Amino acid sequence: MRARSRIVVEWDGGRSVVRELRSQPPLSLLPQRGTAASRSPIATVHMVGSATTPLGGDDVELEVVVGPGADLVLTGVAATLALPGQGEPTSRLVVRLRIGDGGGLQYLPEPTVITRRANHHAELHAELGAGARLRCREVLVAGRNVETSGRFRGHIRVVDAAAGRPLLVQAQELGDQTLHDSAAHLAGRRVLGTEVLVWGEDPSTGLAGAWWSLTPLAGRGSLASAVGADAVTTGRGLARAIAGHPGWTATTLTTAAP
Image (tube, rainbow, N blue to C red; front, top):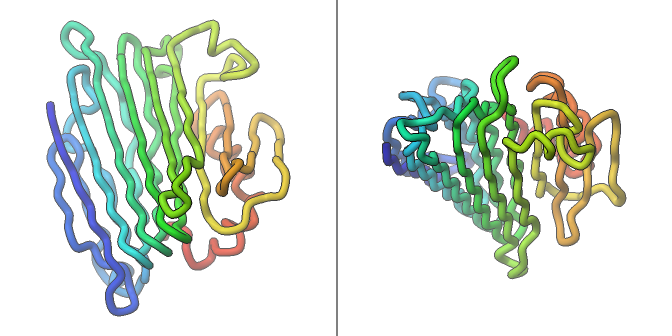
């Protein structure tokens, strides 16, 4: 299945407005409506799986454009299962994020479970304007309960377009048991969570706790990481990590997801 989706959000009259919203199965995009949406300066869009995806052979792309000064929360509503297709071909998901000067985007999908025999490739490319803010989360689960993990290869690239330099280039991989057992990767745990925060002031030094860490990047921004036996535990580790980020904690009351 081949699908292309696109969101464009702009600042207009004191609040962020969804100007363009196009989606195709298996990924449906549903904007928040009602009184809460009309009163909030932040636009919220939910990502809903309208068909089984990613299935081997699927080719899905999502483009998100946030205009200058606008704010968008793009959030998932259910976990994703990466499944093998006939003949076990590769499934592919590419997400492209572009944030204008002074804009903000929180990209918060639910966990992705890499089931046995799946072969899933994912790419995320983010381009930030001057003063743009980004919170981008990824939680990967190596197989369902008592199931070995399929193959996953991921690539994340975050670029500060105003400064003309990359902030983060990262590759991730699941499906190799030796790698899973390594203390440098999953340390025998099943779930890997990462969160990129380019959101105001960064910590002066790295922070770490029980199976979580927060590391300032060389340019601007920080990378939070956590591993755990399940998605809930890993999510708590990520929450502890970003709680130590001064830029995020200073603006949580006005910019956090509803």
